[in-house]
Length: 348
Ligand code: NAD
Ligand code: WQD
Image (tube, rainbow, N blue to C red; front, side, top):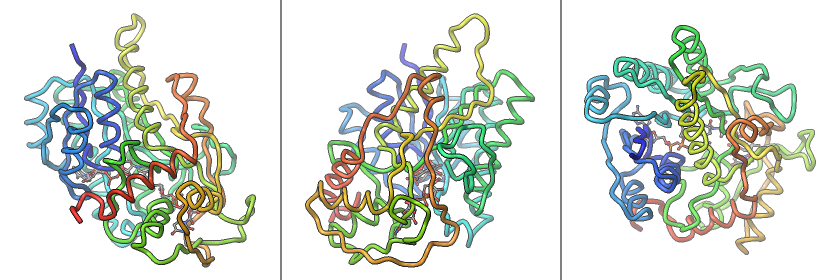
């Protein structure tokens, strides 16, 4: 029998790639998404890629009744919770929206799961919970802090999950802290499709390459890094997707074991463990795609840190997962998606 997984936010960037990986690993997927930052076309394309229909429910995680209906109609093995808003700048302007969506929405989801005794949960957290890290590479037990409402919303949910694990030891609450997800499916059929002008580096570079944006601004050239620009742990979205499969496989193993079936609150970094500078990424992108990427240096962006990369040991030891794809793969696959879909999921 196939294990059925509820994927909230499954029409989004990471969710859509994870649906493919889940299907390929033998899981059945039900997508629940309000399409506030995505398009139903992404789900259609996933379905086309896996050559199978995908059940899609348009709904909001803050809508208790809608969730109750979903849980009463399906028997899930677990929930992967991607649904959330993720724009740091917007979160500063609209904190109530971010706390409502990301925190209240998650609490409603957990509450309905509890009502249906469904207590396996995989949460999309972020390296942002480490704030400005004291130690590099960053281990999971590093101190946590937040510098903006988006980051605070992720940190708050982590605290809710920790408290929940203490209160009820039936819960398995795997908290995956993503570093910097980039890239696209190798088919070029699905990828990242930001609304408006991208805030993140990779989609900005690829939109410069395709001629939608004129020039990249590199924020800061005097950080204490290899070349003065920021250093990040870029991770291919396909590797990230496989990290979710590894987390579920681990929960499957645990649920079959004698001694205990739940893992409590379990934070795990999903990163490569390697730092790459902004300039290195720009140069690699230009080389592998043979596109010119005009750039200028600009002042540091408020809230940015110099360097951030993961200790990826825990994921390897516990889940048997490690990132395999290179910066070259990340650039090649981003470009394949961007050049074939200059307007994202909107037909051009
Ligand atoms: P995304 O915006 O592409 O996907 C999120 C999906 O959730 C979208 O399809 C959106 O429509 C849906 N959604 C939002 N609010 C909802 C609600 N109330 N009810 C139902 N659906 C809702 O973002 P992504 O990059 O795929 O990120 C997925 C998750 O990973 C998010 O929680 C994000 O905070 C987290 N994350 C992302 C990054 C990153 O850089 N992309 C890094 C770390 C963590
Ligand atoms: C990377 C580097 C920038 C754009 C953000 C969120 C974080 C997480 C991932 C969700 C930095 C530089 C960027 C540009 C640039 N998201 N840059 N010019 O800031 O590491 O993380 O996304 O959880 O919470 O904060 O990613 O891609 O925005 O920036 O020079 O136009 O690229 O200064 O050094 P970041 P990013």
